[in-house]
Length: 173
Image (cartoon, rainbow, N blue to C red; front, side, top):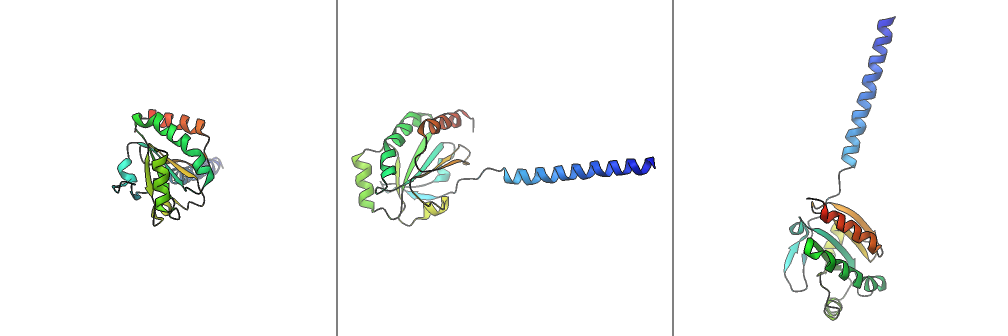
């Protein structure tokens, strides 16, 4: 009788251990951070680059349009955030949506002297790679390892965003 009870306890312990291992395996797969896509883009000056080439920096990818009042309203705060952190390895990509006329994007960027990289996503490929981007503004914050840390739909809380950027920049890659 004692042997049967000990065997039952041992089997129960093994079952619990197996369940724990299985749960950990599922958690470790689910807990893996989402990597930023290696989207290629063209800057307003015609030069080409990709998100992968920005690895090692903290990057904010902002999807916007000149016809979006919230986007236009948040641009000064995006510029201030960019200027505050750029010397520490922070980059901002302002990706104009495919429906935004290139002439409007160029005029907007030049007239406001935007201090960060502006991209015209003529084909929508950049938005699709991060997508779906269902509305503007939508921003994606990427850490130095190329992992997506946070997505913002609508204008972010810039105080909280800047605190997170500061924390990410202090984190060794």
